Image: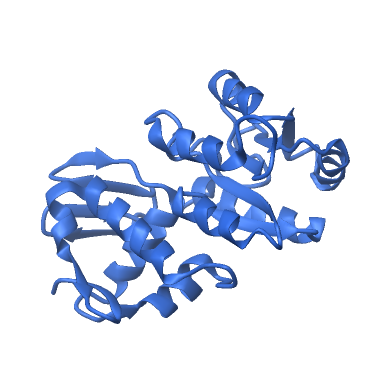
Length: 239
């Protein structure tokens, strides 16, 4: 996916397209009622299969995805989208019942950018949607780039390259890399990364960090070796 929008005010004259996937029509109506129609175009899907088809044909900018659905579950949808190069960077916010802690953990491990537990405050969900969209599509000012060995990161354009070859990262992976780049050589503990990247650590565990670091290393290819594991503590970028 490309950065097509400058801000939530639609500077480019287009609306952000939000796909809401939930088999409960009342929840879909509730979320739609709180989304500003001047800023958002809202699509709906009631199951995983139709959600996959809609992503392929409508190219939404963000997905709000319920975990527990009949047929293809939200977790399977998330995993399938992350496995496809065409959709691997689609921002995904998962909805999960509070009692289903493992679903939230797996959702984040499969690459979801954020999660909200049911029952949820719809205004909080809209704030989460706004926050993710601004980070992914938001207007950027001057270029702010870092070159680190074979790795180059342009924070303004949200671009990562290894040996000048573009690398596609999810929002969470990009935030992880940026966090490590801020202080090369300094250890970032798993607890710090959980708080800094996911912002609210309830229901998120250390293995979630480990899974995302491994995925980040794989995408960076040989440059992934710059990320060192500090046993029992966390990770750091080589000085």
